[in-house]
Image (cartoon, rainbow, N blue to C red; front, side, top):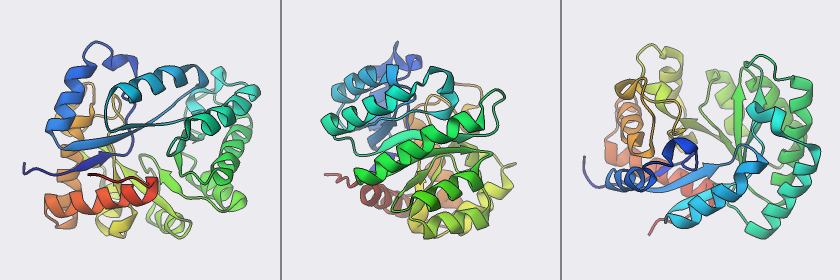
Length: 259
């Protein structure tokens, strides 16, 4: 692969799965051209370690938030604490937050107030929001519309072409990761091939969602190359062209600058 500069727009590089070889995984990412990673949080207990990891590695940027899949760990007072963290740390995004109507036992009525409160914080602090929307894209769109004044990314976009178009009008990009590398993901691949280029971000969701060539293995930011290759091929672009475009999209959304 030629030298290129990529941004992994969604990597949980602070996860315990990287504790044993984080230095080596970071080196592989840099060698693969991944110059920056956006690292979203999952629960309040993870914020200090997330900050520590992002401080230790150049080009890693934390986002703080409360993930819907960790609903059992959340408390209303953590929303107050989240405001304090945002005021003090000045992150470049808020997240990971959202709605999950797929996992059994995650009460939608309990998820909703956490999501809405975080959207309001994102609007107040003018931060892009990193959104999880599994089996809940319509509900997420309704919340985004209702709150208004938002921008962000729907991580691991699971929706339809019509939903993608609605999100584009609302100022939301689509995070595309490992799932697009599977030939059976026909709807996703069709959407990725046809949406406006300025709506696409590349991500890994490390250590989760490995692509087809790493099926069953731990995912890591270096594997962003596999996503890049697949998306470029689907759109009939060179790897360099897609890398430049998606990096520019991430820079605009997160107000970043790659040297």
